[in-house]
Length: 227
Ligand SMILES: O=C(CO)[C@H](O)[C@H](O)COP(=O)(O)O
Image 1 (tube, protein in one colour):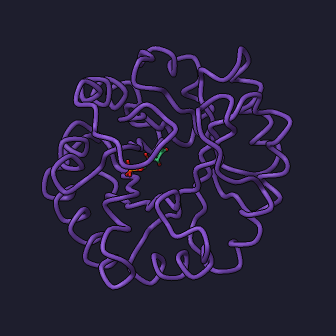
Image 2 (spheres, protein in one colour; image 1 turned 30 degrees about the vertical axis):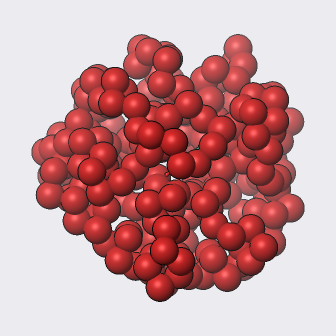
């Protein structure tokens, strides 16, 4: 039996002038997780927010905070993001030479841990880490900006990672360019968590519930029976 598809709106596409309100709106609209994109202007060519902003929005929802660190180095900031309210912290395997050490640091904070692979990074990079992971995030755009187009050549890697996961309780998330057209392709290949920014936030708050429901319906209809 496959896990249900979860939709994780990326607040990168929210109105930053009223983030608390936006988080409440996507919670009410049916978001499963809240995806928080942290960018440092060094690992990726954009800057978003740090632990203080995460802490400020945390009281606005009880939903699962899925914190995606696009930063290097990672280890000096793990504790701050954990204390700010992250439920899961993911980081890029490309961000440093000691991913296993970083996973241990996240687990030591009592949080779930995830590893992220850029589109150009092979599936095999997750293999030595499988027993320590709660989530694998495959980027379907090059990280740094919302509103980019889904990179279709990542689809075979989604299937490869799904096969590597086997029966382990690891979520397989995709991030970037997810729409009602592309989310089903990812779900069919093996993804069970869909991050979507522009496709959720387009049209303003009155459209959020419809946008989330449409992505969920399309992905659920296409998903594979992986486990
Ligand atoms: O991590 C990200 C970019 O690095 C974003 O989460 C991602 O791009 C989502 O935005 P969109 O759905 O608009 O592509």
